[in-house]
Length: 615
Image 1: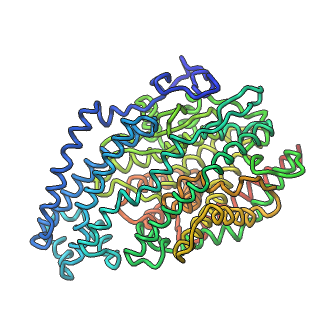
Image 2 (image 1 turned 30 degrees about the horizontal axis):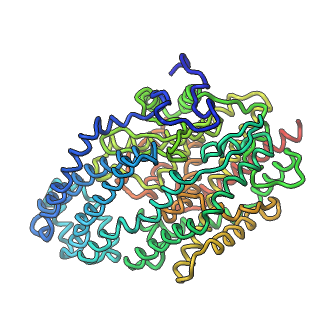
Image 3 (image 1 turned 180 degrees about the vertical axis):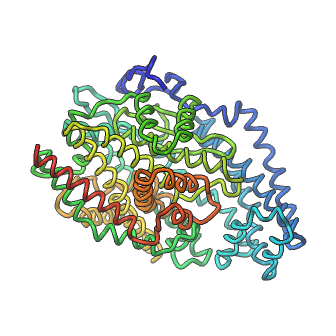
């Protein structure tokens, strides 16, 4: 994609001090949701078909033991319903996320969420009824019915969790609780994206600029320490004013995790969360232990940052400013696209062709606009290309975010083109591998193409910050998440004060006395959406470790390692994530991948220390 016709002033974040409305942004930079549904009428047509698909599935209830063909037909009916419903669900939520203030989009998302309760209730008989079949019946059915071969792994996974599947009436009751259980996450989402407004601050030029979550990252990279301080205090001060409400929403989310774990007879919420993907508990415990045992490189990095910045004390808002800002240029989106595509050439020609198609066909929603959901993600529905949401701010970190989310999108692309619907999703445990592999290969490309000392230092700084944020910070978050679940499991209250005190203590353990504390730093937990998906964040660290190992193999070995990696992307959920990664060349039951990442951090830090020392 050429740069012809593009100017960085096209970025709405650069045109004015307040956020633009969506309809003022060039459509080239917005996603094309018409690829899912060309009109609201089409969505309504498919939505009205859901009750019929539910009835079709329910017609098999109580009959799975009749014949192998009956079981096969029931599983096929489940997949037809799931595929149709999920397409409706994805469209409604993408539409809502592009402007969370829009009442029509909110209503659409609410309608499909309510329908989801009925869908889950319709599914609820399947696992209990399959598990009630006489021993050996499923194995015999697999021999008798050719169509069941597709479901061999799916059926094995159902049988694996036999001890945690309840009776049909109990499963129906849990399914009916779905909307209620989602309330804490939904309330946080609406408060965080639609209702919270932040104050204005003065930027580097002395102009009043409205603070937003998207602009916060840009302000944190400002070379003006006053701007960083004001942005940090304004953001967390705002969250502090909602701390009691956010403690209630997060506490409610943790409470529902405890409820479902106990209802399904798991010894803990952690056991329940890991069992979904058959992840050994030792993987989680090893991740936290290995990072805890290797805090010294992080503290050494903080010392180096403090030395380069020349401050008497380092504060939280000093952790993101580039240490060599003279080479920190603004990067127009189209140049970012070309940089990513060029950097990812080691992943093959066909990979690059799909990346170009993603840009040309408007898979990506690029810029921050008023009411748009914050952050970045990739999401899609089976049979439709994936989508990417960005809030692009034209900095190097945004280029890596683009590479990261395109990694997710490419994972979805390869999986949905290779797998039937039943295996078309993939575990979060493997999801972060694809995204972070893209980042690692892009960084290798940029470092190899850099001769200037200052630019190399800038990139090393960025690489170290990636590992710091993805491994060290996410493990700190994982420690916090484990602790609040353990508190709830002891039936002790989760309050704003108790969670803030816990977060502050953990932060001190990770950074020691190298980072001066800010008044509202302890409420940082209030702004983390991933805490509403139980035991999610540790997978950033494991994903980064796996991606580090895989990217190094691809860069060293070339085609054989790339072939194994693309096989991983095509595999979806057709096998367990630990097995898929092992076949790709990484054993996540061993501490070695994470230790390799920490050695990389230490090596990069040493290289940076040497360049600074000889500058």
